[in-house]
Length: 99
Image (cartoon, rainbow, N blue to C red):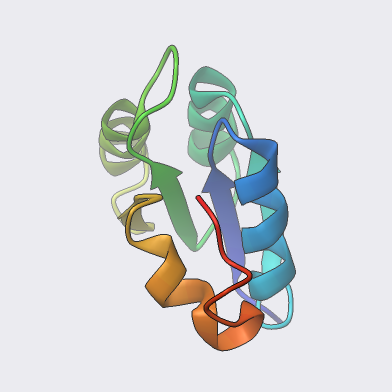
């Protein structure tokens, strides 16, 4: 069984790119709203939650803090568009990544 990952970002383009890269190895769920992500992550059976830092409403810090309280067993990682080009380049190539 593949690990389940929740990716949270308010930008649909980022969600699509991350889903494309991660779905080869994970069962991926995406959400573009921090409050809905909190509800999904705390009620769901996710192994990992990735959250963008800056989002309207509940930001990545709030999302990951809520997940830590409700589900301390879930791995939590913050993502930043500034770091993504170097992380995604192996799949997309350095000239195809824009933030």
